[in-house]
Image (cartoon, rainbow, N blue to C red):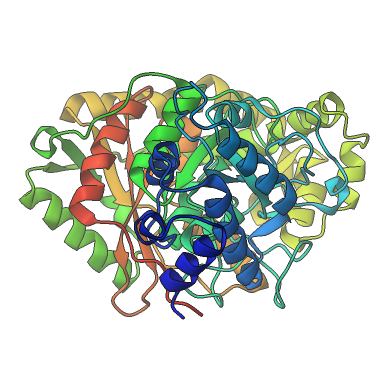
Length: 501
């Protein structure tokens, strides 16, 4: 029995009319927006939809995508959504639609471990504001997703939490490969169609990288666009929650639910002007280079204006901001979070419980002693570099972006989200070399506080793995970026779901 037939049989056993069953659900292709519409019209029940996704999630335990799968809670919420439909109320934007939430974002009544053993018993009593907005819009939290421990990495190779035989969150398209990080489980869940949409967090690429390697869409919003309460932090300057979804329309919908504003319509591509920075095309493997060349050619044919731009100081300015800000703020921000959230532990307790060697080394060697890497394998005090970053480096980086956008009249910069397809899932995937490589293009937007949108553009010719393209726009230009993304998804199409393992 194929997937569609299995889902149809499942829905039939739940009592849906046969005509509705055949038309209403194919979770390989289903989007959150489509599901909400079907549920609103009565063509699909929330209980049937949630049941189908739960069954799919349990069948892919090998991906280690979930830390907590809330089967009972999700089904209870789905039945309540079905019972409340049509009682003189207008449909909510996400009524009855299941979503997943990264495990560093608070969901009332569910554990919020931030992917670390020291917090595995912490259960917040109140939703984070971003979750509260989605639940108020009718969304059902199906579970909490696995992640790179404490969000300090790009691979998702976290051995502390696993449901499958091998450690680490696994890639939806090839379970021998990494799922990216740090919002690893959300990316894998979406790629494998274990849910249609979800939330991650992003400091230097953590919603964009997992979606690049798992074939989903993600938005890193402008700094301050979303409230950050109820989220285990790295850096208040750089952190943000971000929507992740199977489709561009769903990312736009989630952004509207959280940030407000009217619905966004696709931008005419003949009005779009994009810039290419040569340095951001560096280190690309053959599959990524070919996919980007094809995407640029397709956009030009569709009327997009693509121009070469030069940002010669980008790498230098970004380097002066990234580690100094993240590593210095990580201490004070985590201390404040642990106390305010009522976790009952100290940052020293947290550090003792860290299971991942790469994260343990970062915490013990840099975060706790307030140090930064120095020359010749030494460390130096972080405070001077942090103060310089905040007073000079970050403002200069932000000015470089403003000047570049203005000088070339750009809507966005365009580049490969990550330069390589997903590497094998093993301890080496968390190496410093891989970390630096995979944040090469995503880190600057995080440091400057500008929005970044990840879109899938195809599967690699040889690897058959997803390849992503990013658009970085001016600060506050989120809605324009989303409008462009809606049109580009129509141009490129969505990726097919992975083949059944």
